[in-house]
Length: 313
Image (cartoon, rainbow, N blue to C red; front, side, top):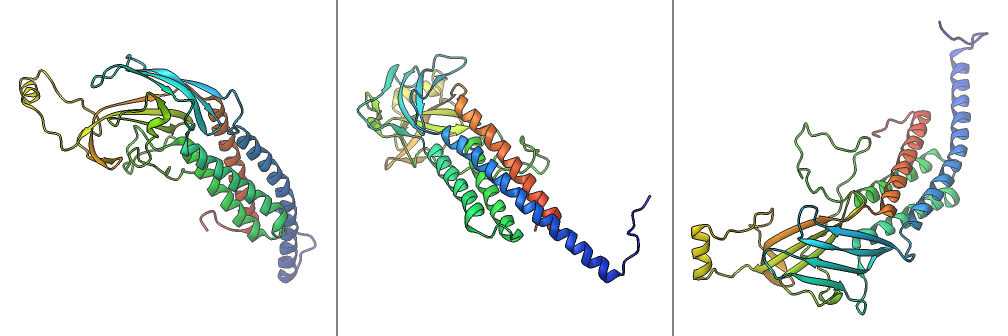
């Protein structure tokens, strides 16, 4: 079965009618995308509200699952940790409780601060697209949607966090866990470059103890490291204990590294990583951002189809 125009039109007239039809379809699509942009702005505002500093915040449990190494909880309000208590029973230091000092400034979570900045940028991008530029220009709308898509992907990458168990350099046959558009690499701030202030806890953190908070799959992850001087030499008793097997180094992925921490060369004697309980606000934020990203992808594809533009252009 075939479709034809009757009465038949000359090729030149047929081309003119096709162009006119495409122009009407493009004009309709650009107008309908204004409703899509309004919906995107509403969704982004909901995402931004989930990071608002509203009391009482979210209280999250931090507990090592199969040991008594770490037990405690922290309270997140917006992008800050405002209170918390940790009880540490590690193998290389004496058991000690740590309480977040109320007299000190709250602990700022840099990934969430960066995420809030990206949400601000995405809202600005939507407003510029709707009110500042030429809403009838397909090239302008297409470039703005591409920019918005990039910002949302960066925000999703921050929530995803750096891989903890996946290889950093996956093999060619490695299949990513998330279908669809691949996420860009999450920016990583090394634990020794941005340490928590020592006076954030009561009692203050000793110089041999490092605490690092990061994001992974929309959950907070606490990594505790017990440090020692990289130039320290074993005494006779320690050498003898290592020789007969009565004592051995705790194995972890950073045991052989040397790091510059607060201006000193250190090694990591012991390392414990604890994932916090599910944060409902961050989980909801991740789900909403994922839905918004798919909406932007659909809008871009529709525009590409009508304009005859390939996806990789």
